Image 1 (cartoon, rainbow, N blue to C red):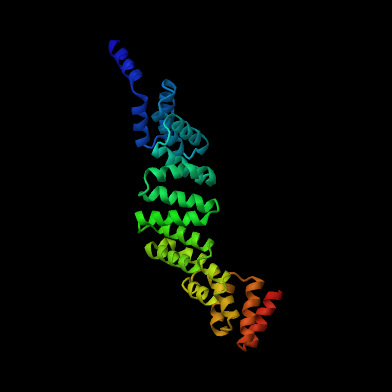
Image 2: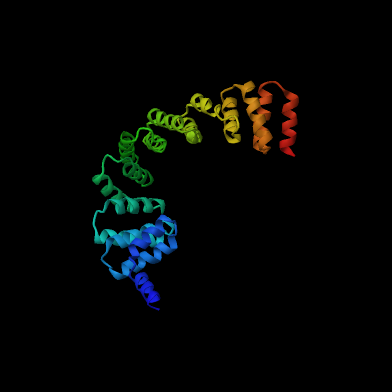
Length: 274
């Protein structure tokens, strides 16, 4: 009997903070939340309990509960770096960039040489519609981590919004060079070239995506506009094969007509009308 009593006493005296950290390490977020709630109830002024509770909520993708817990943490422990950073990132993910900026500014002030807070602050400014400040912090992030494709891409987008197309293009290309997963972003750059009335540059980029139906469709249309009819035809044929819309068939019929292939032109016109 005394063994059971001793076990119960040991269980009751277990530190909920320690147990909560163990649950976090084991990815047992619901259990961690329960334990950190207990720790916060035992000592409402324990900022560490609120911080870990916020962290557990955020790891469970529960921003609605995580945000007020991070705010409580900062009320108890103002300017706590990790809380400022985590709260800023969470607010940014919740599409609240203006609310995120002060927290991320605080994190950057504390650790100006760290790439992550600089990058997140840059993204917040970009989302808030301030590409000039975004560019400034993307540059600082790249200074800390020159091999970040995400920062290169963000910098490129900021420069495009500032109408700095050559500078932005360099960052888009660098991002694709650093990580092939970022190659599709070159299609954004191609669209920017189109908007800037630079079809030759757009054409060169669209050529790099032979398997992309949308890219080949735009390539065919640009070649058609540039009077490169013979080159436009295979791209437009692929567009029709992949997406036989009336618009694609009419574009292909136009290319056939300009290339003096009347029979093929009539065939596409008939199918478009049908």
